[in-house]
Image 1: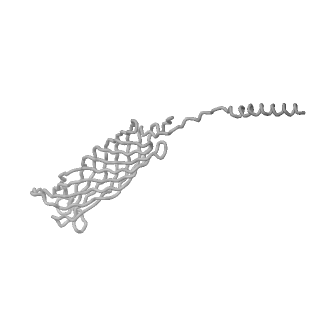
Image 2: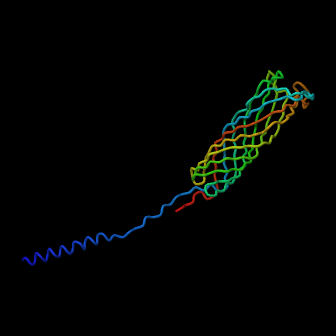
Length: 253
């Protein structure tokens, strides 16, 4: 009986380490590699924008009814402000975190303002009816967030008029004015090919001599009424939405 018990104990003692060894020999499984999605800003894009703008206008009369006025007579200044809406089309390419681009933008505008003339018993009014921007861009991307600066050429379609105190137009003029622009924008990619952002642009449009012609109310229709040297700067803030064709996301291991 003693021999049997001793044998049983010895068998159990031998089997226990073997069972423990079997439990420790579990296979090693390597974790899958981490995949990081990187937003790519490269490609053509088209979009829409809308916002607000203001144009600063100062008038200096240097001729009246064909007679030169020297020195020029200051007629005063005003801000022509209002809404704007339009679209843009462009192309961007990305190198590392740097983003470069070219863009053309065209907008309808309703920037209107007026002031009482300091020289005439009248009111001078101006309106920016449209503008365009042709710019290059340089930006830096933090994945799907892009901060950029831009610069290039600007063009505006302007309308001018003089009104009597009764509100009747006695002279008017139109012009297309070219200048330069600089701006800054922040854009966020909220979907693989969609982005939204906000942008500010300042347009430098300088001084131009604008000849206003009579409407026929006070003088013969089409006759030279006056010439004013008119200065103009424009500030515009817009919200933009773009759709892009290109590789929106790159999987990086």
